[in-house]
Length: 387
Image (cartoon, rainbow, N blue to C red; front, side):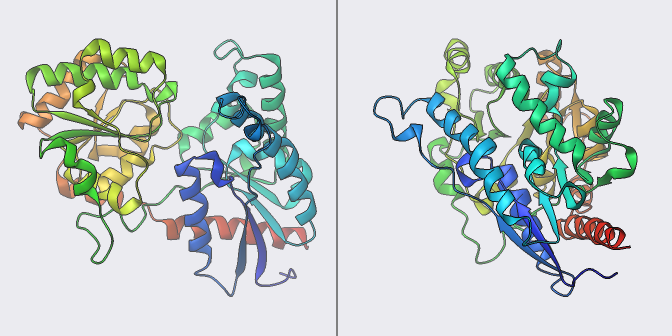
């Protein structure tokens, strides 16, 4: 290998203003993992600030449209310009989030990789009948998809995502690298000594009552409608039961459903918590529910398992791949089936995955292994490019 060592690797991460905790975690965990190999790589985070342009305007700035306009300005203007400026500063480039794959157009594609977490961003182009979108959105998706197609490496978290990429002919198999996510050290069966855990403060409104936990956003594929319907039925059987939903900002339709079901007084939605506190929420939950109709990986599944929590998840190939025998699975959107499965778990009826099985499954996923896989892929790429 004739390329300079340690290799200079740029990690192009989402601006913090995007507000995607999972993407922040993936980028930061990779950066930390690569720091363990100083003789092989010097990794640097490239992360511009999203400027408040429209958000500064009076009356307009507080609207969602202003935030989205600033986001598009960053994604397709400011950030590509920043990437273009960095071309000569690094040996290789890693785009942490595939929704920024358009950055590849401003970078040396032969030395750039993209992590594809799922295909949702490209669905309007790959499957337009399934997901019809306006012309401007499809144009944006095409630019992102074209960047992914040009990249030298496409990383994926699961074999399910790999199968989709191949089925749609996005990239050849030779350019795919499987790099599963890991479990952060805070997610463990027992609290880490000296780590701040404000779980008791967060849960104080529950007054010690048992609770179910859902961790994730309120976007449609998370199926919060199913979550709320299942919880309403369970609460009718167990009035003391509560629901903690972490990470979702409900829209008008979702708020109307909560009101119609009469569960507003039993729903707690704390603001975003640090990982140590979230781990505490996992550890003390009666069960963690993952009601999604689609996922690229399902980080809450392995996080909850690592904390020893029982998990009931939608019966999706990707969630079975991640959770294997350590979870209980229910058909997507089948509320009666969900109610019966969760009731059996809460009452101790029927066989359930053991705590040991949950902890053992989660132990297979480490950020150290993730970083090693990513690093090896770039070292091979650089070695090949210098031959």
